[in-house]
Length: 141
Image 1: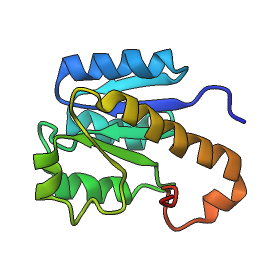
Image 2: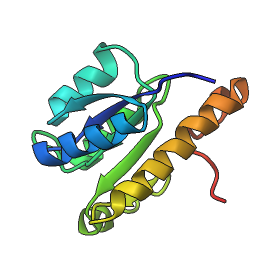
Image 3: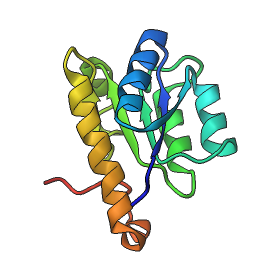
Image 4: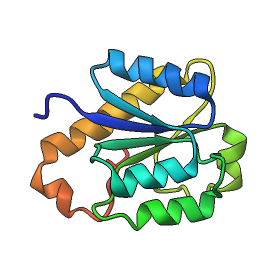
């Protein structure tokens, strides 16, 4: 089992970024932060690898459809969790059906931590079989 997973968090709000970094670091994850679409794409394609992306698709300098298309084109595909307001998600729910969604609200961080844990540990324990799967996300239980 991998000892320390790495997470990239993309959110336009610096308070949300820092809060999520603090919460995920306390869970034992290594965390990097980006604040806009340009930085996100640079990290995803140019920087060191990471195990999971937490993204609020309402990022400056990008639109959700083109951002998600670009992220899906990356090989290997990176597991992703959308962390956004329900109204933002509802506008694009057809595009986000295969991506885990956690609504931004008061208690959402506990649910987000649970979803992150489940995704990361599924990949870590499934080993080679998860690498062959068509979808990078765990099956619904």
